Length: 368
Image (cartoon, rainbow, N blue to C red; front, top):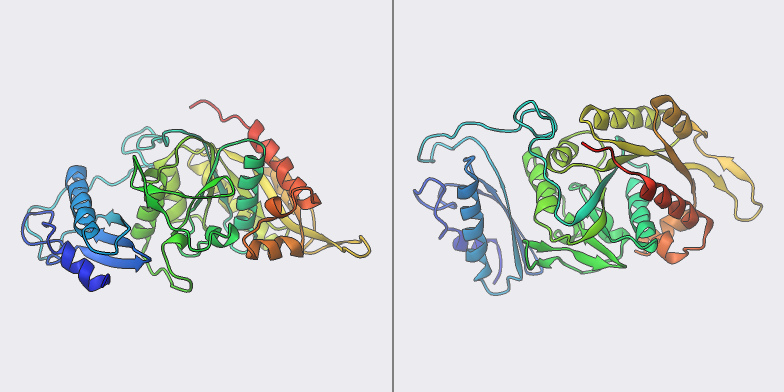
């Protein structure tokens, strides 16, 4: 039977980083998740030597792959201070220096582009509940409809939603040919989300370093192939996931999502300034749910107020990309896994997404 006990027994054959005992006896295995033959292992390895970490990761994958019922093994590692059980000298801490990931004066040191990916765009909001994931999915589909090759990555580890919005059902990532993970493919998009690897209703109870490890693994260990755009659905806030993103890859730019409410606008400004502080371009602001048009009489009603997104764009010197009205159909078809750009590409609201996608395609990042 494939369960945590069997996996721990397999991992007990993997030598520890310091050569004494195994990674199980030295308590390096922090978490094991099993779902439909996909095993996800989190290791705490207290060394900075990349070769040693890669050896332990590879040995762990090979040990678990030998078990019956295993389709794929994903190993995530993080560093920590050695436990009392560890043998060998502690390694010097050479963690990231400046916010962009460098260890010297160059703020871009430590970043590396993803091979084959031309543009990386973060769809972001400092506040939850503003419709960021729905917008990110529909923008990805709009870009694809216009002939671009598009990937869609869910960086919201605690609240993944792309698998629901895209209606992927029981689809699971497979082993890649050249990299560890091959993304799920649906409706012309390449998709990666923690939602593919966890059960419905299963909470993710992880500290920041593990979240950072997941985001980095999705960026660097997924076989994205040749893409014109990798759209990244960011979690709310300005924390671990955002910092890991800008430390790992050079962003083409960020798109900030807001509603017209004052509370959302204040948080949108914080999010925008966060990206500016790490020298990441901001493509513009999208205002979501500013008004509702009655389908019976055609009367327009402002929900929270109107025009706040345009005003803050002008004040902060970024482009106002557009406003997306509140439409119950968008929610309904999104819950059904059939986003509005797929469900009714000729609808007025789908045309808004297509128009914003055109603006994104015209953006050319400054040379660094």
